[in-house]
Image 1 (cartoon, rainbow, N blue to C red):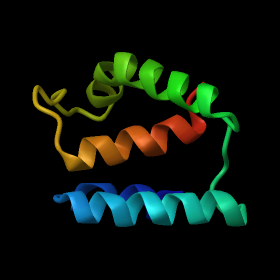
Image 2: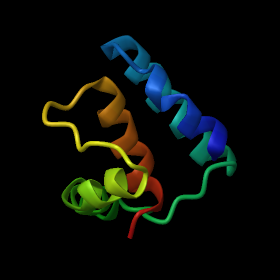
Image 3: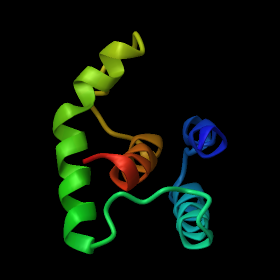
Image 4: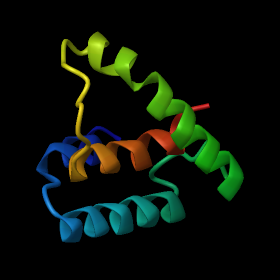
Length: 85
Protein backbone atom coordinates (compact mmCIF):
# COMPACT_ATOMS: atom_id res chain seq x y z
CA UNK A 1 0.00 0.00 0.00
CA UNK A 2 2.90 2.35 0.70
CA UNK A 3 4.08 2.02 -2.90
CA UNK A 4 0.70 3.06 -4.29
CA UNK A 5 0.53 6.03 -1.91
CA UNK A 6 4.06 7.07 -2.85
CA UNK A 7 2.89 7.57 -6.44
CA UNK A 8 0.23 10.14 -5.45
CA UNK A 9 2.50 13.21 -5.33
CA UNK A 10 3.68 12.38 -8.85
CA UNK A 11 0.18 12.81 -10.32
CA UNK A 12 0.19 16.10 -12.19
CA UNK A 13 -1.98 15.47 -15.22
CA UNK A 14 -5.22 13.87 -16.30
CA UNK A 15 -3.26 11.09 -18.02
CA UNK A 16 -1.21 10.33 -14.91
CA UNK A 17 -4.39 10.21 -12.83
CA UNK A 18 -5.93 7.75 -15.29
CA UNK A 19 -2.82 5.52 -15.10
CA UNK A 20 -2.87 5.72 -11.31
CA UNK A 21 -6.54 4.70 -11.12
CA UNK A 22 -5.96 1.85 -13.60
CA UNK A 23 -3.09 0.64 -11.38
CA UNK A 24 -5.22 1.02 -8.26
CA UNK A 25 -8.03 -1.01 -9.87
CA UNK A 26 -5.58 -3.73 -10.93
CA UNK A 27 -4.24 -3.96 -7.37
CA UNK A 28 -7.76 -4.26 -5.97
CA UNK A 29 -8.58 -6.90 -8.59
CA UNK A 30 -5.48 -9.01 -7.85
CA UNK A 31 -5.92 -8.68 -4.08
CA UNK A 32 -2.79 -6.67 -3.31
CA UNK A 33 -4.86 -3.61 -2.30
CA UNK A 34 -7.54 -4.11 0.35
CA UNK A 35 -11.01 -2.92 -0.50
CA UNK A 36 -13.30 -2.15 2.41
CA UNK A 37 -16.06 -0.79 0.18
CA UNK A 38 -17.03 -3.37 -2.40
CA UNK A 39 -20.17 -1.66 -3.68
CA UNK A 40 -20.17 1.48 -5.81
CA UNK A 41 -22.42 3.20 -3.27
CA UNK A 42 -20.10 2.32 -0.40
CA UNK A 43 -17.11 3.53 -2.39
CA UNK A 44 -18.78 6.84 -3.27
CA UNK A 45 -19.87 7.40 0.32
CA UNK A 46 -16.36 6.63 1.58
CA UNK A 47 -14.93 9.13 -0.92
CA UNK A 48 -17.38 11.80 0.25
CA UNK A 49 -16.66 11.10 3.94
CA UNK A 50 -12.91 11.25 3.32
CA UNK A 51 -13.25 14.55 1.47
CA UNK A 52 -15.16 15.94 4.47
CA UNK A 53 -12.53 14.61 6.89
CA UNK A 54 -9.41 15.34 4.83
CA UNK A 55 -8.48 18.53 6.74
CA UNK A 56 -7.70 16.24 9.70
CA UNK A 57 -5.60 13.97 7.47
CA UNK A 58 -3.53 16.89 6.23
CA UNK A 59 -3.21 18.32 9.74
CA UNK A 60 -1.94 14.96 11.06
CA UNK A 61 0.83 15.04 8.46
CA UNK A 62 1.69 18.70 9.10
CA UNK A 63 0.35 19.79 5.73
CA UNK A 64 -2.02 22.53 4.63
CA UNK A 65 -5.41 21.45 3.29
CA UNK A 66 -5.42 22.39 -0.41
CA UNK A 67 -7.84 25.17 -1.32
CA UNK A 68 -7.81 24.18 -4.98
CA UNK A 69 -7.75 20.45 -5.69
CA UNK A 70 -5.26 19.11 -8.17
CA UNK A 71 -4.83 15.78 -9.95
CA UNK A 72 -2.84 14.37 -7.01
CA UNK A 73 -5.64 15.15 -4.55
CA UNK A 74 -8.13 13.38 -6.79
CA UNK A 75 -5.83 10.35 -6.77
CA UNK A 76 -5.66 10.56 -3.00
CA UNK A 77 -9.47 10.52 -2.82
CA UNK A 78 -9.65 7.36 -4.96
CA UNK A 79 -7.06 5.63 -2.74
CA UNK A 80 -8.69 6.70 0.50
CA UNK A 81 -12.13 5.53 -0.63
CA UNK A 82 -10.76 1.99 -0.94
CA UNK A 83 -10.10 1.75 2.78
CA UNK A 84 -12.01 4.60 4.46
CA UNK A 85 -15.18 3.63 6.29
